[in-house]
Every structure is written in C-alpha cells, then in structure tokens.
Image (tube, rainbow over all chains, first blue to last red; front, side, top):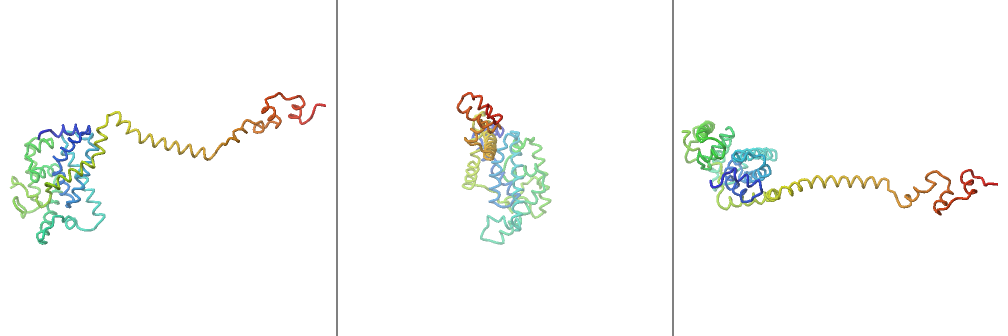
Length: 183
Length: 119
C-alpha cells in the first residue's frame, strides 16, 4: 500500500477528492463482496456499496482512521441488511431467485449456482463480524495476512487464526460438498 | 482443510474493468457535494452549518410577524385618531384647539366641559 488508510482518511476529511477516491478504489471490491454476501443481488449490492461509501464520508469524523476498513465494512453490512429487509417487504420473491443476475444459457447451472450462493450467504451470515471480514478479504479479495492486519488493526497471527476459524465454521455450515477449489 | 481457501466465487462478487470504473465514478459523483462541503474553510463551513437553521428561524419570525400585523392592521386614519381628543374621551372641541394649535377662549372651555356658556 502506498499511502496508509489512516493518512487517506485524514485527507478525505479535509475534502481531498483524490484521497477519497483512493479509499473507494481500495475498498470497493470488498465492500461489494460484503454487500453481495448479504443481499445476493448484483444491482442491489452496487447500490448498497455506493450508499455505504457516501454514508462513510458523511460520518468520517466518527471513524478511527487506522480502523477504517472494519468501520466501513460494518456500515456496508448494516446498509445491506436494511436493503434486504426493504426488499423482503416489497416482494415475497425468494432472495436466491431475485438475485440471479449473471445468468448463463444453462438454466440448470444457473440454478445450482444460485443455490450455492444462497448457501454461501447463509454460511457467511453465521460468522462473527471479524471472521466474515477476514474471510472475504483473504479468500475473495486475495489480500495477504499482513495487509488484512493493517486494515483491521489486528496482529498478523490473529488474522491467521481468525481466518482458520472462519473457514472451519463456514465449511461446517456448508457441509462436506463445498470444499476449497473449483465449484 | 481450513488452511485451504474457501471458494467464494459463487457470490458473483467480482467487479472488474468497466463495471468497476463505472461504480467508482458513480460513487465519486454522489460524494461530490460532501467533498465540496469538507473542502470549505472551517469558518465558512461553520457559517453554512448555521445558515440553514438561522434562515429557518428568520422565516418563522417573518411569518409570525405577518400574522400579527394582518390580524390587527393599523391604517393611517386610525393612527391619526389615536391623537384626537375623542379617542381619549375628551370633549370634541379639544380637537379644534389641538389641530389649530391655539388657546381656547373662556366660553369655549365652559361649553366644552360643562355644556354652558358664561353669561
């Protein structure tokens, strides 16, 4: 990382657009993945991510700069849960069926993928806040333990242990049919 | 087995290329107003922060004043009458003396206060 999150947060507080843009670019994928794990719909996850960044900017003075990532992801998750509630009220349509955006020409494959997405979302939902964040940052975003430690304000060893626990808990929820590797 | 990465690809959470850039641009656009506000000098930002409630209070005060003035409107004629003897329940002859700015005669005073002339 060229400039630390803490430094970018300090600059963004002063309205420096390039600093805020750097924060957005650095965190957009993980914010989107977090939202996606809750709402299961690509468009909704995009909206939630955008809303979360704008909310984060408005409340930036409340953030402890070195812990920006964890703070942002909490905002994302809360907004995703709110969006999901609103959508459930609007429509009685099942989440998995509603969230089918990346559909292919193979309905059977789409259905299996949709089911798997629902299972993954449920497994992630059952994890603790930190476990979920570490798992998404590492296994989805490809961040290294050290980088995650810097983002979440945790020692590297704690990140490793948390990741181990998170994977084990998620696998238990998913069952033996979803091991590492290709789906 | 918990040392192996979990396959989360089914979340369809990949944001690449054009889609990523589009989302960044949309986010920055929505954040524009807040960034502008934050970029203002502190004193100006404080002023802007105060402007809204202050204007709202001023508007309420103006509405309240308009309502009070509308309910008990005082015109020019009414205003002039405030200074006439009649409104003060004094004899009407006093009007003439006051308006002409002269001293009344003894007879006028007798008529005004007792209704009788001096024989």
